[in-house]
Amino acid sequence: MPCGARPEDLAVVISSGGTTGVPKGSRRDFAHYGVAVAVEPAPERRRLVNGKLAYLTQILVDQTLLAGGSVVLQDHYEPLATLETIEKERITHLFLVEPQLFDLMDRPEVAEHDLSSLRALTRIGAMAAPVLRERAHDRLGTVIMHTYGASEIGIVSALLPAEHDRPSRFRCAGRILPGVDVRFRGADGSLDPRSGAIEVRSPAMAQGYRHRPAEEAEHFVDGWYRTGDLGELDAEGMLRVLGRESDIGAPDGVATVDLQDTLCRLPPVRYAVLVTDPERDVRIAAVEARQGMTVDGESCRVAVSAAHGREVAGPLHVLPVDRVPLTEQGKPDRPAIRAAALTGCA
Image 1: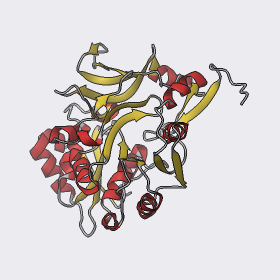
Image 2: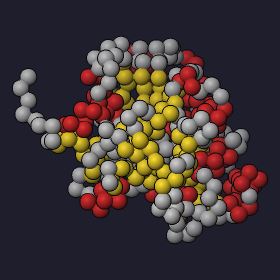
Image 3: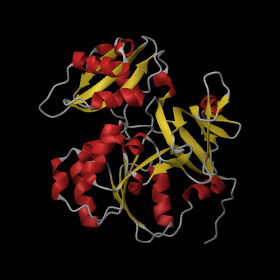
Image 4: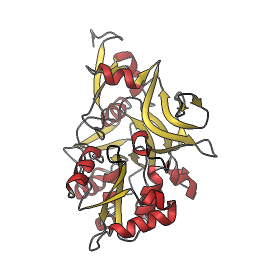
């Protein structure tokens, strides 16, 4: 078919997740988007998409269709509908953000549905408590695939289902993908070979933000994208994401994911998300209780004190919530958590 588009013409604007505020739209021309969606043929792939075509979902849909596969669309995520659709449509690939995966794995109806068609249930996020990732693997089987990436840069690293074979692997974001460069910048602004603020360079990377010059200048620097996350390489050379740079600004320097893991190992806790309130110099832990149980703030602080020290537990604000506030795309809504902590309710 004749096409008037040129490689340098604007092709797509993809929304960010909006976890730290108003979502930003990253832009790609046809040349860069073509790289982002280029994959090997996979006509057997059947992908379920239960939400809007935004964030990384848009790229995954186009990859699936261009590879000759099929896409099943639903308007939004709903756990029982997701389980029913996997069984009915023989879904092979499913992409969920962190809260959705942990919600799905806790549903008793999981055992009532045939999920044998699944080849990869991919979750994406900067981090997740290792104990929650272990539970997802135990509950849903060897289909869990952990990835790290963003709408601005695509997928950076991946831990394949078969690689979830030892405890240390549940603490990492997997191997950096071929063609993707990752480097770390220390607090003093110099580059560090092993740890620091994560910067990424990739052929699939966006070229900037649409109509957001200040944010573009902050994040897209000299051909690299500054993610705002802190990370390191583990002993195997795999990427480990420690949390948002803004959430590890406390002087104790304890990784957000480690605090989250400590809280999620408490029997009453189903899910916990931590954010930093820099104005009050405190960390806020939004904590969901398991059904029929309650979360006690003092017990949470005692556990954190035992694992990380009293200086870490002291400024911890425990916020019991019925449900962790989420963005439209289903990710933890950090500004909403901060606002809820100020009012004392969620």
